[in-house]
Length: 312
Image (cartoon, rainbow, N blue to C red; front, side):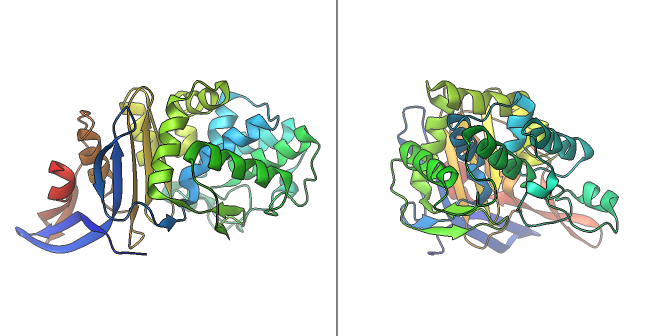
């Protein structure tokens, strides 16, 4: 992929010491480009940023779960006891047990949660994608599809997800990979990703509204306390946010615009500064605790959005 534009600067004693480049698109409420930086039309892997689209396809195929459970289906959760209990409840509602999950076993994603997990072996239900996979197998039960092969790209579930992607993004899927959790991963351009999330948040489709409303009602399920997607949804009305591995992030506003970015180096650092600067392009001002750079125990710099993002 192309390097893109400098989106973040790491300063030390008034000197830019390092930069993080990437690709960013801010679209206004009408779906027009407000700020376009980098390569917006080459394919990227959106990773977990598209779990809301996957969840919509599951509902369309017959999945019926509570709003809290639906928010966890959309999640890359921290792995708290509550997160794991909700994942288990999705399975129980479908008459399934943890053994039905085929996502890659892992320890909890959150630092505190991983520490509390201790020396226990990794498990599928502790992994951050367990909500999505619980939703997938529960969807198969509801639709009468084979549960054992649900990760196969040709499975009816994955074809339904692919169709949801194409409908909302307006882009045909031409490349399929395997995500870290083991599920199929459909490549999209950043422009198509932003467009899909804008449509998801502003759709008249009751299924799309259900997905966004569930995440808005239960932001702690989508990520976890103190984590950026959760914090954004807690602090900004009508905002939906989701992160993905390798520096992907999406923000969509009900009745407003949308933001999508992909960091070329896959870094997650500076995401709060980039979110704040990007939202300011849509007239939304939000302050986060700055990510400081230290030297000799003192603050000597910070990670900040580049001038291109701050001023457009």
